Image (cartoon, rainbow, N blue to C red; front, side, top):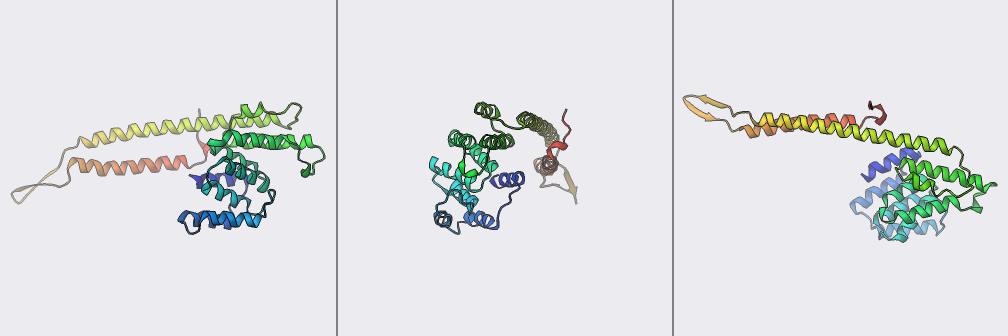
Amino acid sequence: KNRERDQSLAGLTGMKDTPFMVFLRAVTKVGGVQAENIREKLESCRGGVTDSPAFARELAFVIENFGKGTVEDAREVLQLYIRGAKNLHMAVAFAERSTKYSGVLWDMLVEHCTTPDPTSGAADQNSYLGALFGSLLEAAAHTGSDLGSLVSRIPEGMSIEGLRPKLISAITDYRYKVKIHEHVDNMLMEDKISVSRELSHLSRRGARMVCGDGEAQNTKNSSAELASVSSRDLLKSQRSRFSSVHNSRPFSLSIR
């Protein structure tokens, strides 16, 4: 699930895994190297510079998956995504999946997008922060975050260009996703009923008796075994049908 989520996020942000990130995912999975040693080495390579992009994503991955799970680790991972990788989409996605410290992380995100940054080099800090908060709203919309709560935290006097179209687009996208899930649920229920009826029909079939050479021989395949074989074939066909629909593009479904 984490791998699929990361691939989806990479497609959204346009950032793919580096070869080193792919190596880390593989080697930590099989336990080839201790995660503590990897963390120490990456922190040493970064030199303690928060804004350094060097190995920011890699270090965030190691801390998130193999750290102690403390609030300090969560804060450090968020800072790596915000200031190191400079990617709000990844930061928002991390805040959403870190349910234990979600409130603290969202406070950090809002503070980052509302506090003037002299090092940004922007002449108009208000416009810069407005664009930054607009990007935060877009990222939150893609991850299914609570937009209502986020909008209520927009500082007074902040100007966000295109705020109305962004919110309308986010709400429309959310409604489409809800309808898609409802449509898939209905398909699953129909398939379940169809399979149940077919299994019930197969379970009522009688056993076949074969007589030959004057002796009655009962076949080893009872009605239960026949039903079991047929049910497996039927379930495989139903699963393949659902998989093909589920893996298709979401907006190609006909929604009424």
